[in-house]
Length: 150
Length: 150
DNA sequence: CAGCATCCAAACAGATACTG
DNA sequence: CAGTATCTGTTTGGATGCTG
Image 1 (cartoon, rainbow over the protein chains, first blue to last red):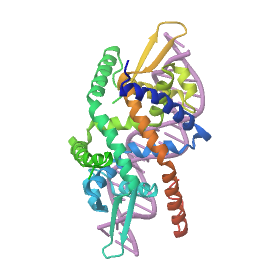
Image 2: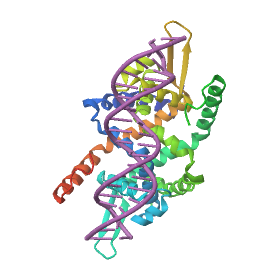
Image 3: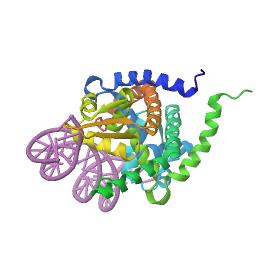
Image 4: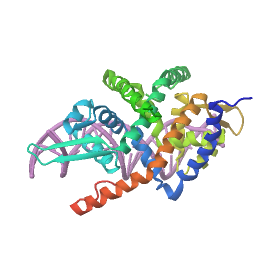
C-alpha cells in the first residue's frame, strides 16, 4: 500500500512533537520559543510585518497610515520590539525634519513567509471555525448561560 | 535560467500578501482572521494542542499535570475556547467521580501541523533572534537607557 | 474529579501632552 | 516628522474557596 504525503507528515509529526515538548518547558519558563511565537500572533506585529513586506520600505507615519487604528505609542513599541529581534531594520537620516525608514530584514522576510502560511490556514478554515462557534453558542444558549464567550 | 522553489514562493508571496491585506482591515476590525491567529500563539492554547496531539486523549487533570504551571482556571478557559472553535472535542462520561476526556478534532490536528511549522521556524531561528536582542541591548546600554525591554 | 465564582495584582493598550 | 512621558481604563491571569 502506498504511503501518501499526509501519512509522511503524520509520521514526522510525532517526532517533531517530541522534540518541541522536550524543549518547551525547560528552565522554569525561560524557554525562548514562547517569546518568539508571541511575535507570530501579536496583532500589531503581524500587521506591521505584512505592510512592510508589501511596501518594502516605509517611514513611521506612512506605516501608521496603513495600519488602521494603531496608536503612535503602539507603533513605536511594536517597531522597537521587531527591531530588537532583528526582524526589522531602522535607518535614521539626520535631516530636518527627521526621516526614519523601516524595512524587513532577511530574517523578517522569512518570518513573513511563515505568517502568511498561518494566514492561509486561518483563511481556509475560518468558515469551519465560525460554524463551530455558532453551534457551540446556540447549544449553550439553550442550556442556560449564553454569554460565556464573546 | 531555472526557477527555484524559493523564487516561486517569493512570487506567490506578493499575491498572497495583497489578498491578506485586502481582507485584514475590513468592517472596522471585525475580521475573524485576527481572532483565529490568536489561537496560534496563545501560550496555553498551543501547549494544550501540543500535549493533546502527543497523547491523543487526556482527562482534565492529566492535561493539567503535563502543562507545567497552568492554573485550573486557565486550563478550563483554554479548553472551552478550543472546544468552541471546534479544535478540541470534549466527551463527558456520566460516572462518579466524573470523567471528562479531551482530544483534538480533525480541524485541531490540522492546526497542530501549522503550529509545529511555526515552532520549527522559531527553533531554527531562535539563535539569530537571541543574538539580535543581545546586540540591540548592549548597544542601547552604551547609549543610556538599557531597561526598555525585558 | 472536574469544574465555576470571586477577588485581586500585574501587564497591556489607548488618549493626551510635550520635544529635538 | 518621529518620537517620549505620563496617566488611566481594560484585559489578563493567578490564588482561593466552593460544588455536583
